[in-house]
Amino acid sequence: AQSVTQLDSHVSVSEGTPVLLRCNYSSSYSPSLFWYVQHPNKGLQLLLKYTSAATLVKGINGFEAEFKKSETSFHLTKPSAHMSDAAEYFCVVILTGGFKTIFGAGTRLFVKA
Amino acid sequence: DGGITQSPKYLFRKEGQNVTLSCEQNLNHDAMYWYRQDPGQGLRLIYYSQIVNDFQKGDIAEGYSVSREKKESFPLTVTSAQKNPTAFYLCASRRGGGEGANTGELFFGEGSRLTVL
Image 1 (cartoon, rainbow over the protein chains, first blue to last red):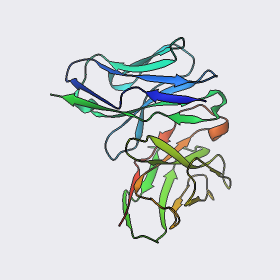
Image 2 (image 1 turned 30 degrees about the horizontal axis):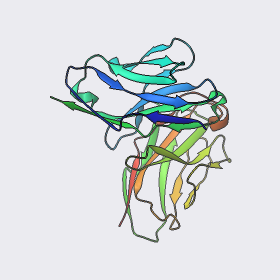
Image 3 (image 1 turned 120 degrees about the vertical axis):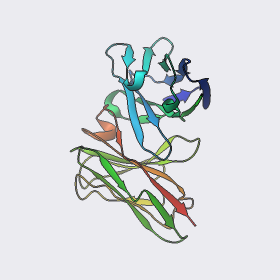
């Protein structure tokens, strides 16, 4: 069965320190992978996407993610956290052919001053 | 600017009442979706539509109904048959053929929060 696992429900970092949000997927096919961010009572905004081009993907607001097929991972990173990064982050997988869109359960990022 | 507009942003309903949530997009997207979001559960698909006058049930369609009479509009009705309707509802759209034919990103509206009193 296809699935997406976000390994941490909550992550807390200090402002100015690196951010790592982990995502693993399970799929028999080559997937398209996305990271979205959601601020409270708002819709989801696309941060970045991987669609079988370069394995290191750069997104908005200084975020990037690396697709590692051997590890079936697509972890999201940022070198230096900002207070405005505090939000919920969703890893999303779309299977080849678009037959199914699968959302992770989300990781809430807290940023301490 | 193109985008997706959901209304109302907040809605209160008494038990036994039907309510309709509006979703309008001017992105010229073929596919539209409704998701329900509950704390700690990610997003769950209620209904989706790939073209006008066609729609399909998602994973949690019971107690909900939709219509797709125009390309730009995909309203969701939460009926009295929905046992636990209090949630945050998100509408999304995607260019192309939707769930079965496209791997492009989803574009989301700002959401509607429904509370049953």
